Length: 176
Image 1 (cartoon, rainbow, N blue to C red):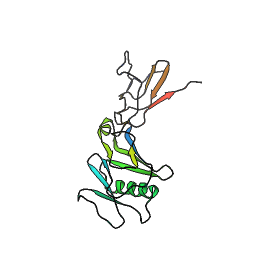
Image 2 (image 1 turned 30 degrees about the horizontal axis):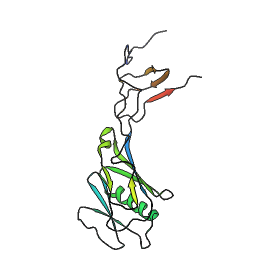
Image 3 (image 1 turned 90 degrees about the vertical axis):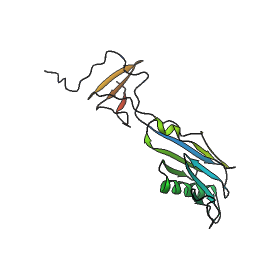
Image 4 (image 1 turned 90 degrees about the horizontal axis):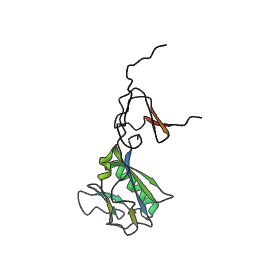
């Protein structure tokens, strides 16, 4: 029996602190408590979305309009806002949830830069959960074709090389 040493790395000391992580995109959530009104704005980075009356127009040519329905409701607004974001945004994608009256935002790229995207609003009946998108991180890289490490009794394994942009690669092992 032989050992193929191609791509094998043996680590004699930690090459990072903490536990190995997969890359994650930053996220944020806008929650409405009631129906928005015309002229209220939602800002994501430098992109501004303005609630406009049915048949109305935005107050600034650089804004994206989100038309309030003929009979406005939080449900119809979150769907319209998510559609406007997905059509126009260069930063994030959006998913509306009508049961919760929320719009979940996901930054387009993995890593920490998404954590710098400001999220603000001028809404009386809506708010973001944080002042910026949160939770974005890079992966813990490994050049090894296979890596197995143990930290504080937990075993982690990567079956392929992991770049800092890898959204999967590190797995927690449970031996039974």
